[in-house]
Image (cartoon, rainbow, N blue to C red; front, side):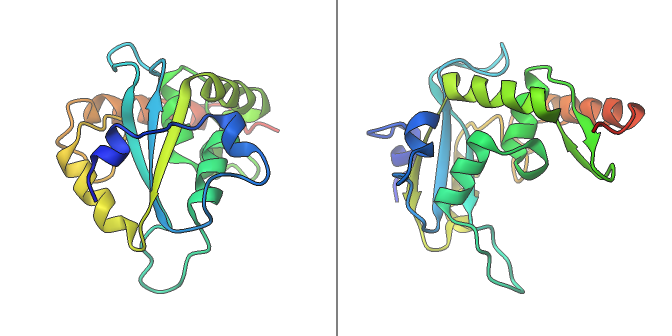
Length: 181
């Protein structure tokens, strides 16, 4: 597989296109790449690949039920507790992270998650490739490409320490605030 398929895909898909039923995203294992028409931070370039993810993730002891369709759709409309991409984007965009439920999970709350979904619908585009064991390809892409929004396996990226700190600050602030309903 050539990384060009993810870096410069023939087609990028919007939230509207991905969230329709039937969805064009296959219910298969693979790697997905997120491109941003407007980046979530001024130090990042517009119109390029900033993050890659996989579905399912590697699980030695059980089989995951995740697939490309479930993950991509969740990133577009889920919440920060279940999507590291949403957590990263919301933190970079300055949304307020809050503890919710029992206080162990953190999201941007109803209004913040809705604002993030709207921002993603306007700015985030996704592509994917089917791959039976996507974790190998993900590791190759992260090691070879400039993917500033990926934290895992990406300490070599120049944006890594800044992103880690922004997320840590958001978590610290959330722990100081009361649990949100």
